[in-house]
Image (tube, rainbow, N blue to C red; front, side):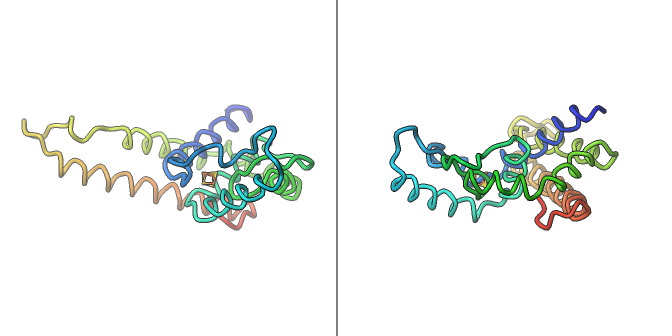
Length: 177
Ligand code: SF4
């Protein structure tokens, strides 16, 4: 796997986590971005509101890492929120964590990384299955299928969380995405 492929794969894992657990999924996406002509005073109020939503988000760390990897944020422009940080805070975090960011990108190439990727793919597949459409012994068993699917999804998510926690702790990141 090349480093470019590894970066893309890691990005997919982070995006899957965010897709599965983003607290902002049902919110107005405009809340996280300042419009071109928006006065600073109204943006400040919305920025505080957006950061409050992010603070309780279960995938905040993944969101922050993806934002850092994507180069979101600007030292000189206050116009967005991502991963619980303002754009200027993201830019500062990218500078402060540049060594750790390089380390986690480098770690993408190892075997553990590939296992994580496989688990994430299976998690996405399981989450996309329709339990109504599966049959067992010729009879629909929707309730049992749903329970079985939920258990599998929880087990996959737990495995991913565990591996990710270990990897990120090794790389010096305190909070696991
Ligand atoms: S941290 Fe904030 S921007 Fe990121 S997924 Fe969660 S709510 Fe959305």
